[in-house]
Image (cartoon, rainbow, N blue to C red; front, side, top):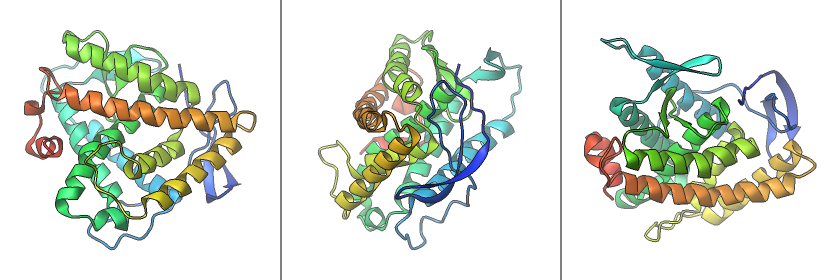
Length: 289
């Protein structure tokens, strides 16, 4: 069971600037986290080059949005809930999946628009980028959520505190969830990838895509180099004894996320809760690139 015990303390990180970090209570020393979420900026506003702290604050705001939707949802009939650790969770239904994906893609689009080099792309090119990055973005959020709640090989958690599990009656979905747990949840758990590293992973996924028809985004090389440096500095500071090795292992996780993106996309072509025809018009438009 992975439990987070947050206690704030301030520290200056190399190449990152002054941020507020917090400790999570696990067997190793690794675990910082940044605080003070800010309002999500209007994607139509002029987009300056965002810094790591800015992106982290926006990520916090986006995660809080999922929580607000989860708290405000009501049900006409009693809902079965399961105790996992000390908390109760509900099995995700079709509307949960649709809502989490819908919010996730909109969050990914707002996130990408913070970078002027993405914002200046043509609409068609933006759609091609978001078609891949949107899936990667929400998988990072879900992998972090799943690893932070439990370290089992059964539950995969959505951002609104609902879950998918390996005992699904739909064989396609059961295998899909097993793959997500094996390839993303377990590495996130083993490496103790935290919320700051989620930010860095998202930036790297946006500016170093794998899709062959992905349009070229200006300044990609410089942004990738900058956030690679952030990741190395952060990893070494977080785990002084094996930070460089850990850095390499996190880079390998990027490859696993890209493979999971392809698996996720293929899942939308199969019968089940992730079938594209079950999504709203906005999501169908995101997947039909």
